Length: 333
Image 1: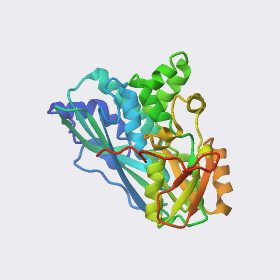
Image 2: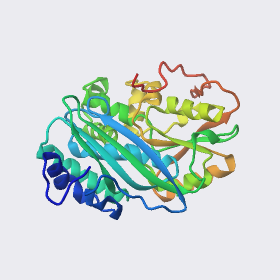
Image 3: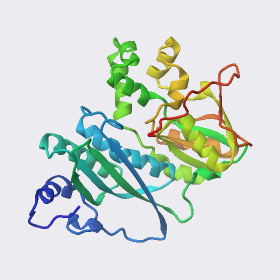
Image 4: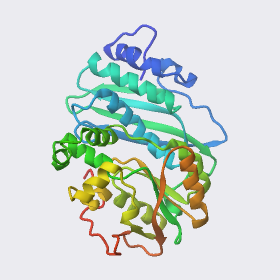
């Protein structure tokens, strides 16, 4: 993302108008160079990149401000799960056309989130595309040397914990697509709006980064589905897990839909876009994590136990029977 003091192209004008105001870090040079500088410290730099694509991660008629927030927040969610503090991001934006009605609210919301999460724009690129629009962000974070929380640290006997609530985003997407959940909530606009909001605008748990560094043995964010992401964490750690499905936290609308039989708990366990934190911790560290969450207003719930073995994690119902999950998570391929 480059532009001089006198824009000489449409791309330069676009950058100067919408994105230069977001480049508040001195190392970004006001987006006037071909690269940025991240000043070295005695900390490790954590690097994460995620892209969101129109028709896959957001809908064509989603408001542009929510698209911007989702693009940045899905990356912030990963930084949070690694125990990292945001340091900045670079943006690649592929657009079909340049329209102020879309770009102005997109840039405004991106700037607001960049400011509130302490993650300034450092640079990037803008390109045109004849296909679906795409926003790719690479986010940088800082973590004390050697302290990044990896997927591979879970041990038998550790507890499995998750933040927030699970399954809301997949229900929100069903509402937006006019699926069965839209019909089930046809007389409850508040519940509909709540679930749609969870799909469009994730809530990254960056306020828990320090507590995760201090107490978690392994962690990752829940992006593709709780069941599938837990399987990934267990595989990286060489363990398995047993989860009590009734302990998995659900929002009031999701719990009501399950109780009515409008959706099966299995669908919520494998639905994507939760962007909560899944972690493990030794038994004697769990209360510290739970209290840390309470302090910053983020529920942290114990849902099961890490066990020895290499099989897929098992999800048990209230009577101890194993749930049959047709799919563990969302998959692009």
